[in-house]
Image (cartoon, rainbow, N blue to C red; front, top):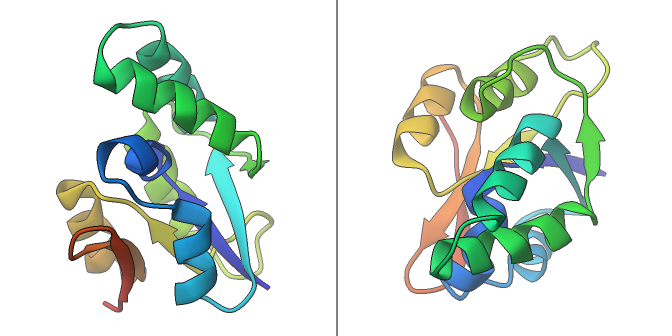
Length: 131
């Protein structure tokens, strides 16, 4: 079992990048268990209320988030919640082994904190980057 945290844009990748996120996680990790912070779900819901491709991607992301376990956090901003969860002590509840994101700034923050990151490589494949 490999808990992997999906951020907002990871859940929007099926529409924005033509990535089959759960299939790719299965390919990259042994027995992935997708989790998501409530702040990311709230962000997806706000974006889904808009218009255009971003709203469609967010709507799909909301559906995908329903397939994930929500993990508790204190931070209100989605990226900060991702970092909070990803850097928890290994003995704490709701810890994860890596984070799936396509956000370059968040990826850099996580790698600087020694958190492995799964991101887009090539056209529509995911790859794991170790710190």
